[in-house]
Amino acid sequence: MKKIIVTGGQGFIGSNLVEFLLEKNYFVINIDKSSYSANPYNVKDFKKDKKYIFYKLDINNKNKFLKIIKKHKPDGIFNLAAETHVDRSIDSPYAFLKTNIMGVFNILESLRSFSKINKKVIKLVHLSTDEVYGDIPKHQNVNENYNYNPSSPYSASKAAADQLLKAYFRTYSSKIVIANACNNYGPRQLPEKFIPKIIFNILKNKSIPLYGKGTNVREWIYVRDNCEALLKIFLKGKIGKNYNIGTGKRVKNLEIVKNIFNIAKKNKIKFSNKNKFKYVKDRPGHDERYAVNSSRIRKELKWRQKTSLTEGLNKTFKWYVTNKKFFKLVSKKNINKRFGLKI
Ligand SMILES: NC(=O)c1ccc[n+]([C@@H]2O[C@H](COP(=O)([O-])OP(=O)(O)OC[C@H]3O[C@@H](n4cnc5c(N)ncnc54)[C@H](O)[C@@H]3O)[C@@H](O)[C@H]2O)c1
Image (cartoon, protein in one colour):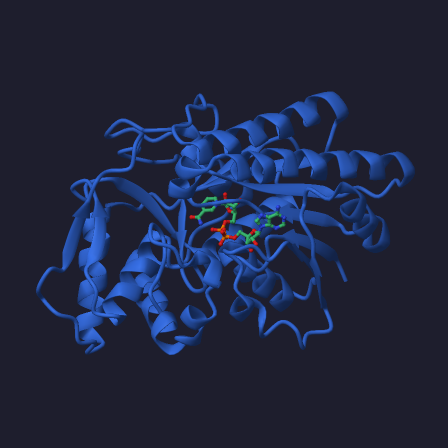
């Protein structure tokens, strides 16, 4: 049985990836520092699984991280631990630099130390973002050779980590692969992010905050499809390469909100028609549009997304309606004026 470390496995994509890998019969070691964005609800079903272990640990703790690697000798590491909220990165960038850059450095150094004493090859799949490419002009999409041009401290920290990973590949032949994914949505995402926030506010009959005019365009992928892409990258992805993960489905934020309103209506959720939207002051440096060209992963690794946006949004809405306890277990640390929820 193959052993995999997932970092950030109590968060949104991480917990979906842990679930997916357990289903595929991997032994999964989850390393997470249980920050405000982790939710115990996300991992409640794994605890009974004998193929699952959890370590509460900061990826910046190199000694303990290396100890875990030496003990378990995993076949692969998926690094998903990160500070992830762009607005928080604008308010306080330091934590982003510490985890998203120094944390990656620590993982790379741990693997380098391990490779000196052990012949086993551990492949590191690092989850990065399409935001590293910056604002993409209308009618264009960008492949893996496009220049990095990040706009926020969050995307800059992710871009810096990608560069470090590539340098370690060049210099030390570190066994790394980078996945640049578009916006994920689905079950277990913290409601400070766009889609779960819309659903949460509909369920609470509160208006939906929209940046600017709601015209920003994002490319969307259902989280399970992203997890399948990550596994393909682990199994077949070429060491030292980047793979964009995208669907080609690019939609204005306002359209997403309208789609979810319709789903709520169909599900007979009562939601006041008054003050549906609350337009809020735009985020500084807000990118207008993201759009990736994902033909590399499609051609080389034969990956395809399975879930359409309509199907994915319906599934996502249903999940939040039937898992209301998820909202109750959102960390209290997340409740503050600027980002918080009133539960
Ligand atoms: N959500 C998206 O749309 C998206 C798109 C592209 C890439 N990504 C990337 O995917 C990864 C996961 O994103 P997410 O949306 O699931 O984030 P999330 O905020 O839901 O989860 C992040 C997890 O990492 C943990 N963590 C944070 N700092 C840590 C540290 N120093 N040590 C150990 N654990 C730590 C948190 O406790 C949390 O459980 C991130 O690297 C993010 O940049 C996300």
